[in-house]
Image 1 (cartoon, rainbow, N blue to C red):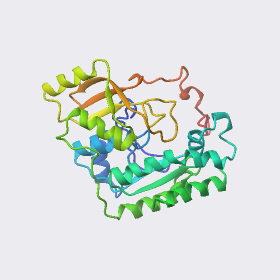
Image 2: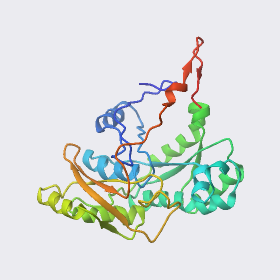
Image 3: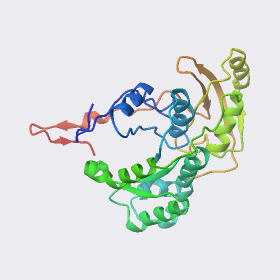
Length: 300
């Protein structure tokens, strides 16, 4: 496919990172790398889900070494993590933004410290974001040695992403010390603990229900060397969607373990996560239209 500006794009796969691996196919990524100077791929739902699975599962299995990572954030989401309810997110609130910043900073530190990769924070700018709020995000990220770039691609197309693109190119020229959060020779439980403690910042993992028995069976069947794909809520670093920001003092409950032998990983279900995603009764496509002059309506 191609974008409205003619940039080639492969749409190949796309399972959600909260219930699956969250990455497009290895084939699409390898083809894109051969056909362009830079290949940008998405791994959604933050550094605890999409990025973790892209790095620990896909890169491991495909022999890929990323050059840089873009952590996408919004001022609105950070204020929500700081305690503001959704109806009030359009109002400037520096106190709430500062209270929610540990969420973003933990995502950033996961990339730079756990995985050894350079990173830029892309602020997906909303019209309601104030200059003071944007400056606060810049200051907090700068303290970690990470730059912030505004992204206004949603409204301005490629022109709205030039600042971000320049920073990505700069980071790609740097050497990095990419590494996984766990090694192949660890047990299934040790891999779960590594992700939970290093990436989620949990105190540990508890196997509940049949999970302990399932773990023993999977290792007895020879699947112990596979990477783990943890199904977890996208609303929190923990397995409880109500725990906002960057919680501490919690444990992750794994209630089910199964093998996806074809894909090549162990799936661990945590908390109350369901593997069937919840979709709206009316899809967004119902409100999108194109008139006789080619003007598109209903996208926003």
